[in-house]
Amino acid sequence: MDCTDVVASSGSMIVISNRLPFVLQRNKDGKLVRKASAGGLVTAVAPVVINGNGFWVGWPGIHLTDPNEPIPESDPGDITPTAGLKSDKVIPVQINPSIFDSYYNGCCNATFWPLFHSMPDRASFKGEHWKNYVTANKEFAECTLKALRQLPKTTGEVPLVWVHDYHLMLAANWIRQYAEEENISCKLGFFLHIPFPPWDIFRLFPWSDEILQGMLACDMVGFHITDYCLNFVDCCQRNLGCRVDRKNLLVEHGGRSVRVRPLPIGIPFERFVELAEKAPKLISTNQKIILGVDRLDYTKGLVHRLLAFEKLLEKHPEHLEKVSLLQISVPSRTDVKEYQELKEEMDQLVGRINGRFTTPNWSPIRYIYGCVSQDELAAFYRDSAVGLVTPLRDGMNLVAKEFVACQINIPPGVLIVSPFAGAGETMHEALICNPYEIDDASEVIHRALTMPEDERILRMNYLRRREKLNDVNYWTKSFLSAMGSLQTQEDHDDIG
Ligand code: GDG
Image (cartoon, protein in one colour):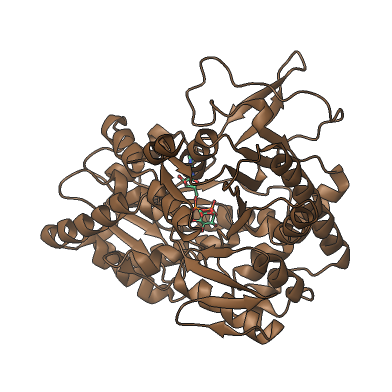
């Protein structure tokens, strides 16, 4: 069963996320058009919204000057998962551009992103950004109320509001308050896609109590792994003095018991297998590729990775002219100084390492600064000998999962994962590599390159089996189940 036949039981689902599941753009005639997103999350969640006649609330990716300008319907030929999401089921959040900039680039990306990844020295704490974060969250909450008001009031049906990620940690507070004022019942759930940091990091944020109160306005709060759940529970106890139950992951707040749950996200496994089966051959069979795929972000450990690879070539010259590192770095937040500096550092490092080891027939690093198509990505995943996923800190990391899904060749390659990614906690048969320990990291890569075939097969079989079972549809159903809201279309029809 996939999510095409799942609806949230006894009520519709409203998803609220910073971005809508598609972006709006203007075509050359100035008309608004939808540009679909093919991400796994959208693929899994959109059918649940559509089946249950729910709503999606989010920023449309463009500042609209006329708030009454209609949202376009999807193209007739659109086959993406959001094609069935009618424009009247989409609530675009409009926020004044300068407030949005301060909320998004300021508070979300310059404060919460580094802080929650346990890099407080990179975080800026500005009262102005926080003020605009509050304003923006309130706006998202008001738009959610618009959606709640439009749902038919059927006896016994309680709609489910699913709030996503660090952009919207306060929104549930107002949604609960406004809904109570208007006598609308709803269940509120939250999922954080990035890590939740330990208390000693979290408390550096001057308004940390407000964040916890915002999240605790939900009935259930989900994180990728148990460690993040425990960090959150700990913060609730130490910041707010809440009574907590660590064994059952419960936090008492405002006379309610809030459930905290580890819900590790998965990928659309079968879609990646199909992509891998059809993908072109882009890597010739006589080369061994170590693959890295990341947004160009300081959390992803890219500099450490290049240094570990350099150390490998230094200590194990048998790999010279036989092994290359293919690093795909997708441009991200390019108008931010820190990201520009990281790009410079990477360019220089790639140049230095290639200058040091390149021979007339071979270059050690192939560096793509840009995005590749999904077909190309699947080809790289399938034909690489090693998947190198070594973030300094990462909520989960989907690349690790996509890599194993595409490893359909026999014998397969080897996955290397950092213990500081959620994926490192759950993908037990991968080789674990501490990216900070450059020397040891180079040895782990060497071990992966020289691993016997039978061990590779055994490890990859286990990894693939787990990801196939725990795919993104399973994640969506686990969320609904944790909310007490899981039902199939069949059950729904029976009741109806
Ligand atoms: C956040 C959390 C958590 C990358 N390059 C290309 C490309 N990609 C796609 C991958 C993958 C996605 O981007 C990256 O996902 P990650 O999980 O690695 O990282 P974040 O974007 O930081 O996501 C993270 C996630 O939320 C989900 O909860 O796992 O920890 O930080 O899907 O395939 N796709 C294409 N071309 C590329 O060049 N087509």
